[in-house]
Length: 171
Image 1 (cartoon, rainbow, N blue to C red):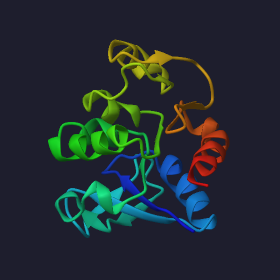
Image 2: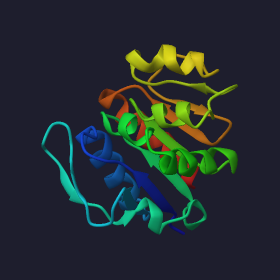
Image 3: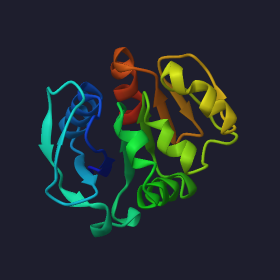
Image 4: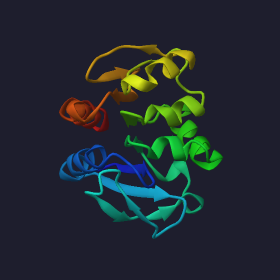
């Protein structure tokens, strides 16, 4: 049975880090729901290749409505972590041990949610030291699965491994 995946993103998300995993999730029978500040908002990727209309505003959803959380990279996670609503939303998934998929700069939201301490993870090179300061054991690998819950990857080149391990957790 398909899972319902909350995808938090805003303008300047890394286009392919949203589109490729979202397609893989949908192709496997899962529902991918996009969440931003306002329902119907138009968001555009940082490479201007992808634009979409958001399904829900953050105030219209609760984490318990979803089975998993997906955080694409780009500049989007850095913007979202400035909004306490998104931080609280992400923290719920980590605290409840629900699957969380964060690629590239996606872990920035988890840093602000203070949920990486004691976790093994990876992220884009420029945020790895921030992840270490947040208490994570950071490794430079294409994909890291921690505690059968958290899947992290570094960059677009890692998407095939990221998709594979994310889909494994959704089984």
